[in-house]
Image (cartoon, rainbow, N blue to C red; front, side, top):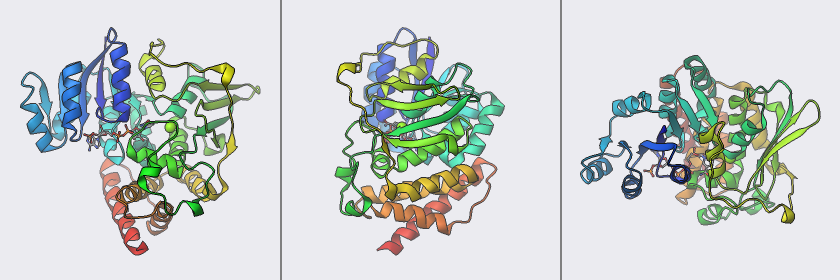
Length: 383
Ligand code: NDP
Ligand code: MG
């Protein structure tokens, strides 16, 4: 039996993880969960899975929920959360908190040398150099859940060596506005941008998918996870979201991973390791398959170029990119900036902040606060 600690249990990834656990109860046990304040969802999870430990960041949610379950251990302090993540009883940590907020827990898990199934790409983008080094030095195993990265992981040989790799395609669905130039997207509303054709996801990543910033975050994520130069990766639009990545080797053979779009597939793969975990799922109907691959849109080439520069530069560049994007998405979701202004916020914030080489998580946290403040100033200057 594997004991799982699910960070971000009340979110979209959390939901998919719970479904995979439920379908494989004989070998997977939900040992602990963490969320911010969604007590309604936490109550449902406790009733169904009886986790030993429940962390709620929000004080009020923690108080009101813990009173209802006197036999469950409820946690609310940073120290409690750190002890839980580092506990010897935890076999697998799933990092599925959204945004930079997930960085702290990813670091604790890496420091404790855990097996980490990582969905929280923002941690890797913002802190790739330090995070991967820490994980390596502490013997933490990092397994990607993000579907494209999990696909690459599956297409690599069992020792995960990339020495014979020639090229890797990271596919992108293109989001709800596929084929529409930015110039025609000025007036789109959050509800339009949230309406993804293939995937059901949390609001932040849905907007990232609509802007295609998600694919740029994923390029940076891939550069760190597989320790490869960005030149190895191509970003390609594939509207059906069936082929999640393609790895081409020096001998000319290309290996791809395919499935219908559903996050339970990469999650089951990451949780199962060498063992294939059964999930109830609609297989691909190959007789009806029509697959298209289209170049990344030319009006997003400066965005892609910025992401490629970030891959080459490292240091604080990914952090600034991520912070500016998080603020821009937050303000767009509140209807306080236009869709096309998300790009302006990213580029202008990036120009304003001098880059540096943070050495530890404390410095990363300070830089993150600065970058977010700068992005807010940029937003003020837009209106
Ligand atoms: P959601 O918005 O659906 O869920 C976010 C989760 O994070 C919730 O459980 C939320 O708790 C929790 N959370 C937020 N802030 C904190 C905090 N400070 N402390 C503790 N918990 C917190 O996001 P998604 O599930 O869509 O995405 C999660 C991560 O996975 C993101 O990094 C995303 O990029 C990545 N990802 C998601 C995919 C998807 O299909 N959804 C695909 C690939 C990657 P609460 O509900 O209480 O606020
Ligand atoms: Mg992805």
